[in-house]
Image (cartoon, rainbow, N blue to C red; front, top):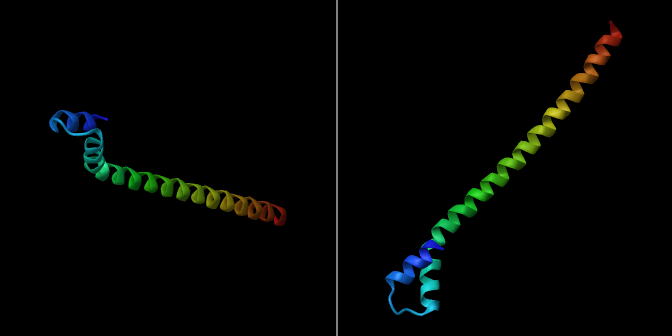
Length: 73
């Protein structure tokens, strides 16, 4: 990653484990933000699916009521 290369250049004679550890700490906030955004996206998709089901249910009910109304007339 970009941050790994930046750390490698700036840390001089550090070991690979030290560079990887510093990189992990540096990018942790970005990873948390990405995880939160992914969870929000999943929640939005689930809500959209629920709304689609509600719309289909209401359409079915309206179709039934329309047919009943037409039958009575």
